[in-house]
Image (cartoon, rainbow, N blue to C red; front, side, top):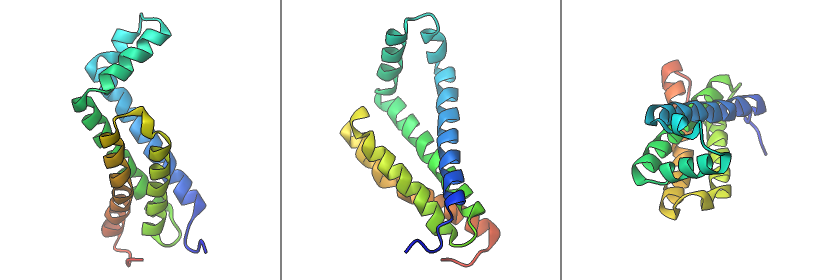
Length: 140
């Protein structure tokens, strides 16, 4: 039933996705100066400032693109470390991202959440395709 899925590769891909997304978000927050602004605020006010900043459409778009980039990286990593079926393992990373996205669907505007959920699986598979094309592995 789960032939071809390499749990280690999928876990590494998920970790790469989450780490890339986290680091990219921290870089953006630093670039926007949000980190400096929240430094001297009480925890609740700092959280509200971050949330309000990232609810603006231009920052939602930027955050979404960074999240999708992280998913592409995760798919690439899963494909790279898979013993077989690189695209299947990349897709598993995307499936995890879809489930996670559905779980947090109330955290952002509905239009954003729906677009994110719809693009997550293709982004992970794209990462697997990038790896496959660089390494000339037969398609699965």
